[in-house]
Image (cartoon, rainbow, N blue to C red):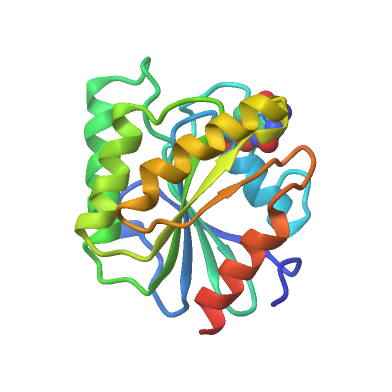
Amino acid sequence: MNFQSVEFEAAAGRADQLKKSDLPEIVFSGKSNVGKSSLINKLVNRKALARVSATPGKTATINFFRLPECRFVDLPGYGYAKVSQNEKQRWAKLMQGYFDAERNVALVIQILDMRHEPTADDFDMINFLIERDLPFLVVCTKSDKLNKTQFNTQNAYFEDLFREHEIPFIPYSSQTGFGLETLKQHIEAAVLG
Ligand code: GDP
């Protein structure tokens, strides 16, 4: 699959602005600052297609990127404490609008920070994906920040956590590219079947 021929297509701040769903969609979800933009940029080998933000919580739109065989859908990062109640409600409506629209979701990539236990918001998102029976996997990013012992401990923790629901998880680093090929294989399999 060609990951490098990619262009920004649209940003939707409200559910009625969502792009028509006429291609398989690879959806990226995670809390603010987890490394979602860095991951998208790494996948498509661009420096700044998805904005790596200095201010967390700024991306409050669903952004669509067009590739030859699929679309990347960048969901707004959640869990940023300084966001107003109004903004949180708009975010929830937008997300609901997206997932209620019977879209062609080929795979949701739920991103977690490998160094930490998932937050309550992370668990809400994961449980939502399980309840909706959406195809998803977990990418544990920033693995380069762990030494070998810490890596093994966290790896065992996440393996244990996701065993019951058989959720695949991939230790990953945007810094070193660790896990990138594995992730690309999962995306390819989801898009091309
Ligand atoms: P987003 O808010 O989820 O889109 O997160 P960003 O991609 O903007 O990343 C937030 C911060 O984490 C930035 O300073 C990135 O350089 C850093 N970062 C992202 N991924 C990694 C990674 O795999 N390893 C390391 N060491 N830093 C990362």
